[in-house]
Amino acid sequence: SAVISQKPSRDICQRGTSLTIQCQVDSQVTMMFWYRQQPGQSLTLIATANQGSEATYESGFVIDKFPISRPNLTFSTLTVSNMSPEDSSIYLCSVYPGPYNEQFFGPGTRLTVL
Amino acid sequence: TQLLEQSPQFLSIQEGENLTVYCNSSSVFSSLQWYRQEPGEGPVLLVTVVTGGEVKKLKRLTFQFGDARKDSSLHITAAQPGDTGLYLCAGARNAGNMLTFGGGTRLMVKP
Image: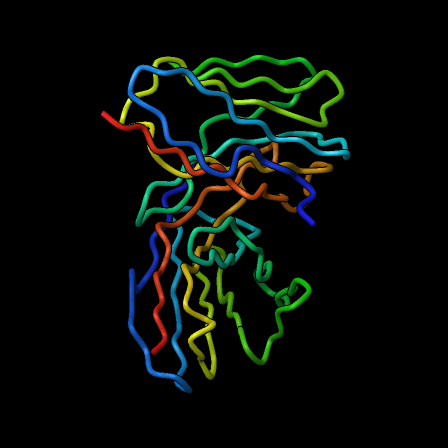
């Protein structure tokens, strides 16, 4: 398993601003993932962040809106840019150290956009 | 359209009752996981199943992987309020592939 922390745990932001979410892992991992979880719903994958390469975005998510950094094997950031109320969600990072594709998740960042 | 269909979406039961959550697909998965998520936290891995027909037990929770590896179930015996949460199934088509999550089952166990 892996221990994952996220900062901030929650934030309330104004429309049009940007927020950067940090994800720190206690061990080196190749693949890190960013998910969005809208209220009462399941998880939707935003992008996969591999160290040393550009993030791979899923359909419906673009780099200009959700830029991702992955400077090393234990850290990643996700920025939610030019926020609108529709971006209000929980944002989760996860890592993939397991042999059977098991993922371990951070506690999430609860974002509210006014 | 969800590749993995979970049912029911919501379940509210009394303490001591039994329940089963289903995760179904038309696709074959190489592995399937079940997670539980409590408010304010990220999903926590409960179990991974990889062999068709496999049954795993975790205290009062019993997980089964279908023979054809297209479906799975989670059975909880004598549910307790501490079982309350969002249960998610997630499958991988092949090793190294991304996980596909089901829509989730929100369980509430009333004391």
